[in-house]
Length: 186
Image (tube, rainbow, N blue to C red; front, side, top):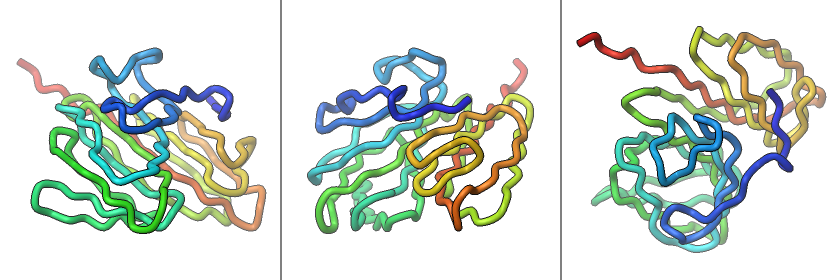
C-alpha cells in the first residue's frame, strides 16, 4: 500500500508540546490515548522540551532534518545526530535539547509486549529486495528521490516481499521492520 502526504494525519503531541504527522497506526483508526500495536510518525520539533511518555512501549527515533538534538534520559545524555537512529523506552522521562535550531524527527512507537521493531536510514542506488516474514510489516518512508512508484514524502506499507527500484541516481529511505512478538502459551 502506498500512502501520500495528503493521506497523513497531523495532530498535537500527546503532551501538547508540538505537532506530529502520523503516517501509519495499527490498528487503523487507533489514537495515541489508547493502546495501539505500532505507530509511525514525523514530528516537527521547534523548541527544546519533554517527549511524550508511552508506557509499555519501545521507541525508535531518527533526526531526518536539522542539526540534531541531545536526548536526556535520566542522568544519561544521548546525542541524536542526523540519520543515526536511537532506541529508548517509552516508559522513561525523556527531554530533547535542540543543537542548533528546529529539527524534524521520524518516530516509531511499538507495544513492546506484542511487537519488535528496527529502524534504519538507507541510501539506495541499485534495486533492493525486501523480505517480509509472515505476520511482519515493512514501512518504507522515502526521504529523497523515488523508489518504484513512490516519490519523496510517500510511505509504503508492505506485508509481503517486494523489489524496489530507485528512479534517481540514489534515493534515501527510512526502513522500519515490524515483527509480531511470540506469545507464550499459558
